[in-house]
Length: 166
Image (cartoon, rainbow, N blue to C red; front, side, top):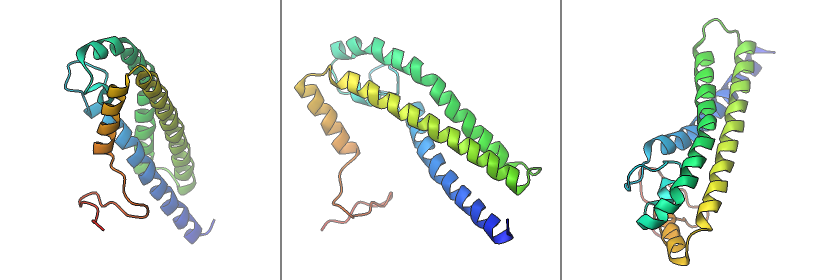
């Protein structure tokens, strides 16, 4: 492999890594950081029950706890893949080919685990939402709209600025 091809490969891998770490970091950070203000509740889907009455939260609690136990191994696998990636990234003894192979393997594992985690979250969200009445589903929809507003097609959202008003 020529030096310029190796350099391009490394640049592509680093960009891919950045995107994957961003995606995984957002998921992991959200799971680990967000705790509902309603007492001890699994944080994975805590946002969905935040505005529900206490009786409904209590009824959902066992299912959400079981889901948390199911997804913990996926979170551990994601953390392990990230650590392996970071270790390889700073290993001065790896040549370019070894580094590229290791990075590809760890990023592939991270993608696989992230996809499995996201699928588990979606399945659990469906199981929870179908148990809600129309008013509760409306509250969930309002929460989603407030925290993930839609933008006109093609309009770019800057993380630090409000979208332009047209």
